[in-house]
Image (cartoon, rainbow over all chains, first blue to last red; front, side, top):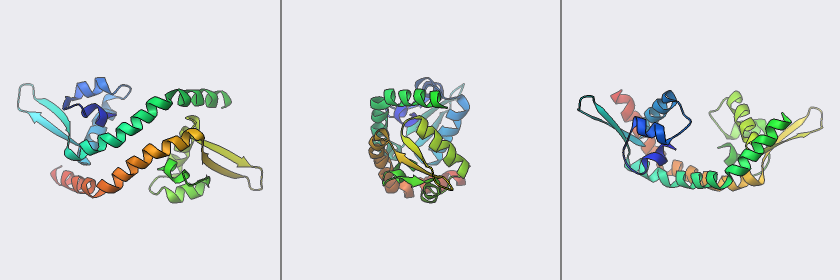
Length: 93
Length: 93
């Protein structure tokens, strides 16, 4: 979801956090660091007071947003079925 | 990866574990339970001695194997770039 959020352009940490709901600040920090390590995201620090940090998709990251977009479309098309399955599973357990 | 492994047909736990390398038995158990809860995988217990348990994609699960296949193709096409990025990142850190 972070990659999809960044596919519209660079974002600051708090803007990513607002866009990608439901994850903690720590998970977002760790995931951004992993995406940076994988060469998917680049991190840029602007020498301002206070310093401004922006995250952006790299060229490699741009190529990933298409397959993730396909996965996202699947999720949007099938979310109701997944939620129904969860309800039925929880009743059985 | 579990969904892709099951896209060739039902498998037993140990066969999934052999196919999907690098994850622990606990992570596989938890992930299978989550996929079952989401209606992606069904679990079937055969009344044999000892009991045989097989996991299989549901109809909903079958629809997920296509988007995941697209993601897998991306990973296979770009794994070298990701490994190089990790090496460079680790040198900088």
